[in-house]
Amino acid sequence: MSEDHEILPTVLVIHPSGYTEFLDADMSSMTSSETGTLIYGEDLEVVHSSEHLARITNECGLEKNLVMCFARKAKDTEENYVGSMLCAESSGVRGPIIIALEDDEYNAFSFENEEDIDNVFDAIDDLTGILRRETDDDGRYDSWS
Image (cartoon, rainbow, N blue to C red; front, side):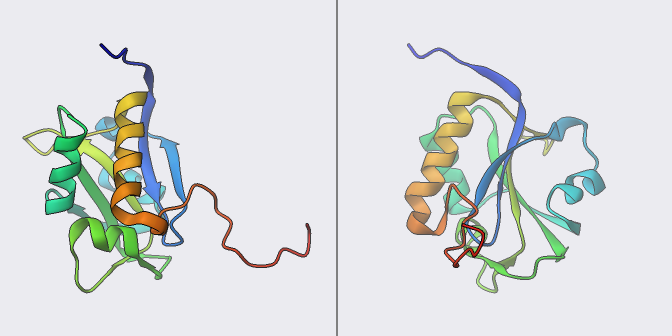
């Protein structure tokens, strides 16, 4: 039997470059506006269900459902291919996305144990392949190196 390792409330933020960060944020106590500041955007769109989110929820044995948030008015207007894939949005999701949890009444929650967030991180990686990255290195030459 695996042991649960509690963590501070944390969400995944996946940027258009594919860079993924674990960000300390307590979704259960945040307003929509506060959540938008995490991804530098306004007017949040929440994807409550999609084929991929449901599959990852089931594969990871989560007690709550995966949810994805992105800003309709994102300051970063680059397409987020991971977000587009996760919600099957044909027109493309733009800017950073937040991956969090919600209950059956659509109340938002953060991840609170390491195993759950790591499993979701790995499942998104398996789904998207090379689209998701662990570093923010965009591959360009850095003259400071």
